[in-house]
Image 1: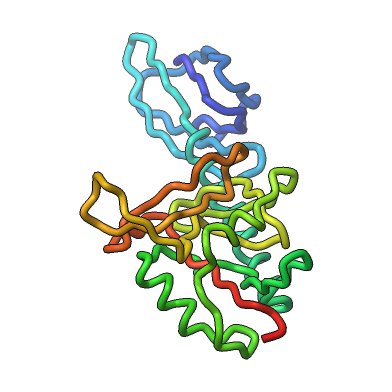
Image 2: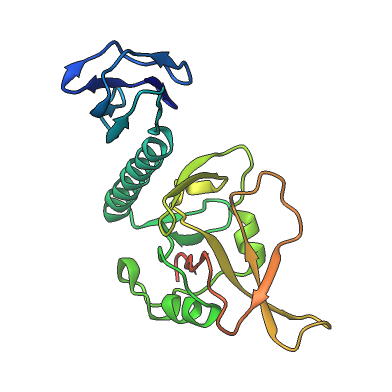
Length: 228
């Protein structure tokens, strides 16, 4: 039997501990014809697999696939850690005030997909930190808190993916952010609103998306004028 793993792993053959396998380094083992059971796990124990193999008189090739599931699980755990840290920090410090502009920002966005109408309504109804004058920021206000020299871990909660965002104030973001700035494209019958993505290193012209119903990975990050 020829065995190959796509990740380093510890494993057993028919209950007997074998020498650990190195990723993509196949090894041959003499086994009797019949059914054999393989149990394997990544060295950190995060991912495990069981394989039942039927071996006849010829050679049987067995591939132990652990890497994809292992990477997905590590990413899921990282996302969960970022989520919990963001929630804990937001509970202690729910807002951040930009000393340059005097604008007070919510420390986190709404955390789920919203259309422009839903985002606008979310901010208008927010009573975060006891204030009732929250609103969607303009595109210029969003651009004002972008900083390419800053990188903050952000988790896209809907797809278990971590990316780096470049935003001041250590704000906790989970997607692209709607602005209140609207425009009309000559090639579209739908009014659109401008959107800012803090994950981009090189900032180009902000994108625009339809107000009516589009919500994929779109978020509401609320702002107000401090001192008012």
